[in-house]
Image (tube, rainbow, N blue to C red; front, side, top):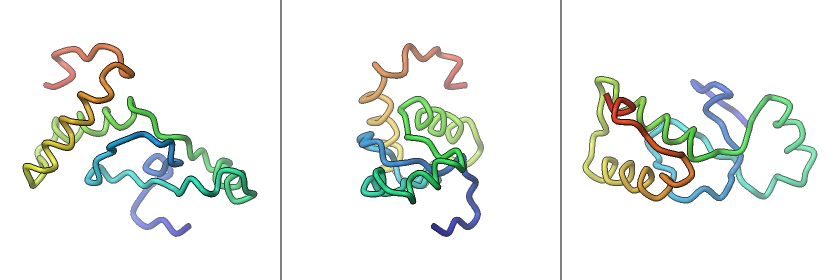
Length: 98
């Protein structure tokens, strides 16, 4: 696993979390390593399973910043993820979007 320009906080194990947008800078490791020594080694580096709250936070951070997604497709993917996983994230407050 070669990681360039990313930190460990950008890398997650594949948790079968549906619809993670590809433009968030999140790297997903293949699920096929979960029963291997490689998995145990990578876990030592604090790589965790992706969860909807972490992905939602990335989407919110992106939309709070000055650089918005470049395409309508990205905006739609972000909205779909937030809608699909909203029941896992609890209630989002209006100021989460400021």
